[in-house]
Length: 116
Image (cartoon, rainbow, N blue to C red; front, side):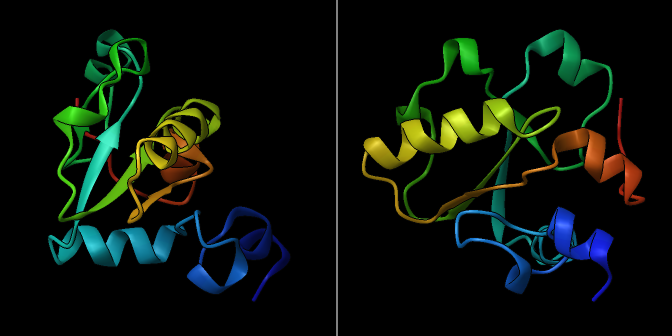
């Protein structure tokens, strides 16, 4: 595994259990196995988002709008807001939740598609 892959979590093995890597996220999205929640504000989301994601801005974040029976992946621009949302969900008792640490910026850098 390259230094870049280790640094930015391209695989699940490279990071803590609350972080999902690029390759694993793509596989799980393709399989329809996760609920991808983009916690950026609506105008940011409209400017480009990961296909299949749903927008639930951190400024209005409410765990009651999320399913408890599916794996939840959180994403933002760089990972800071999704990390905050992750802590919020953990405090609310959610167990099957992770975040994509590099955010939409890293997703795009690694070749992931965006939809406007």
